[in-house]
Amino acid sequence: MRRLSILLCFAASPAFAHAVLIDSTPAPDGHVKAGDLAIMLRYNSRIDAPRCKVTLTAPDGSVQRLATAAEGPDRMIVTVPVKPGDYTLRWQVLAIDGHITRGTVPFTVDAPK
Image (cartoon, rainbow, N blue to C red):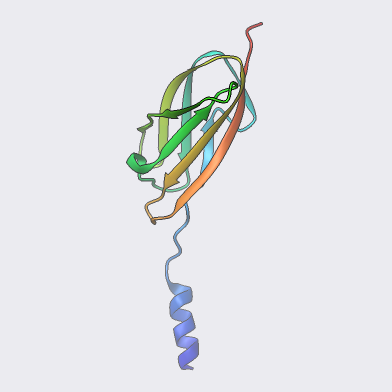
């Protein structure tokens, strides 16, 4: 009985979720127009925005660290100029539960028609 009580205590403790990207602009594998691009990353939980990192890899392979701004407790925004080609947005966030998660958002900037 004592073992069961101990197991139930652990099972009943609250579970904390890592910050998972649930919405982004641009969308993964999306296509956008050249020019100033408003990037938005939204997560499923609160994030510690000052400790988060976002980089943009351009078609030529250069990597730029983006200075994002918090827009609410669960999202970051930044505007950056982009030219036609394939890009990769890499993000790393620290959730309020103390866990770091990472991911990528590949997208394409289309040439003007």
